[in-house]
Length: 161
Image (tube, rainbow, N blue to C red; front, side, top):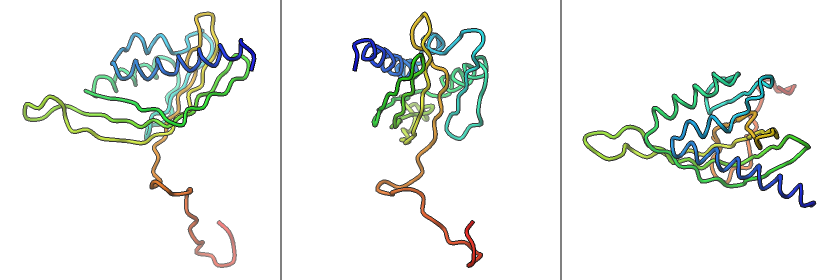
């Protein structure tokens, strides 16, 4: 791998880490700076269980809402893979999320909940550095050790679904 390509990979991975750090720290300004804002390229985001959000304002509003309603969140990223193609990069990873909601009955923190999510973060190179173009996260619903979705037999014995 060339030195320039290795530098790009390092910069993309740093931007990806900064994205999750901003979420953990509730740093909306830092998160806002990481999203692409070139005046022409539309950004998009899919949070687990949400419809597609398009446009920078709508995407950033969703993060403001998440930050306002999440007292604690921590991401443990695994299976991180980075792919580069010119001025575009993809980072795929598994987000092992630990989060807590509002505290109850004088407790310091509400109950903690774990969630496993797979994510794809698309980045574009800009004069300011690598910026997030799209974030797509989907919950993992398979049990650990499952090889994938199981096939279900068709009600029609003679044909495929």
